[in-house]
Length: 264
Image 1 (cartoon, rainbow, N blue to C red):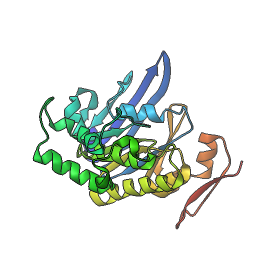
Image 2: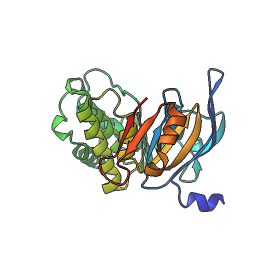
Image 3: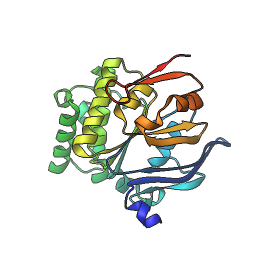
Image 4: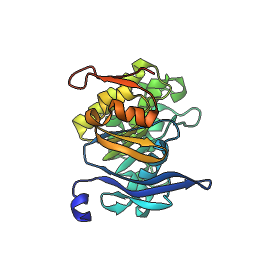
């Protein structure tokens, strides 16, 4: 059974549990991620979305269960080797003062470089492609501190793309951005998913954006997986009531624009 599952999944969680400061915060989650999927992880604050993404990335070691990356336990894969397949962008990523955009993007090449080695032609080409894909090439020589929030988020995406991963894990990439930049970032991620076949797992708070952009949705409630499946058939009014304890109206499922309106 495991062999057939691995043939169709790129990243897979099996029976994940996590304990933080003596409290169990994630309970027996099993979740397959297929190549080319765009999976949105939704749920209220404290549901365990960030903890799940950190576990999938191999940053957190589960107290029970495992994560498999291309059939291998993610905890047993050396960090640099893992980073050639999987890139993780945290909530509100930060870098030290004074770094140029090109310096930040170059950090994404660490899986391919020695500690004190210079950038190679392959490194520079990967950086160039990443900056062009994310529209930040024009900012290459500017300090990242001089950019807007949306521009900085594009830079961090470029840093992740410079790793040349197969999987991109994004933890609330549009948090604290205004609507224009939220749309810009989500359209960029969808373009990368569709044009490059990049597999995306994204924690996202806004249910309308999840419905419009994600192909698959996993809903979390109190550290458990409440539902997982195609976005249009999974993110229903009944599920929203169960997970978020609010009444909602879901419209536009069969055409654009899809949206979720909270009515109570």
